[in-house]
Image: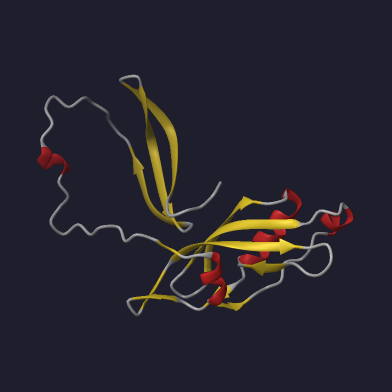
Length: 165
């Protein structure tokens, strides 16, 4: 499963008017839990009042997650743990690019990372390494902010695995 801006888990599906609703709902951003909700009762509304759907005056919008390119992320790269080429992949002459999606925190640490594509034999090695990488914080209006990016890890048979923009 790719981790992008927001993840949700729906459990205990409840049927209602030929549709299904989650009886239990969990949400997370960047791998960090945000909320849990449990549905106690479902009933049809007799009338719909717009005021029922108006957020309170003190409600704050969810800040959008900034997306940066792989090349931009590479320029912010401070500390890289080299991936270990899996011996079984080397023996099978498997090489290639593992493309990962990552959320980098305000402190420059990788908050979450997941595989977008790449040879199956190389994916875990890329994940294990990138989880330990550290970046210079991304500044937006002179304020550190979380960012979403892709990370490309190349595993060549001749040479060492490395990140490429």
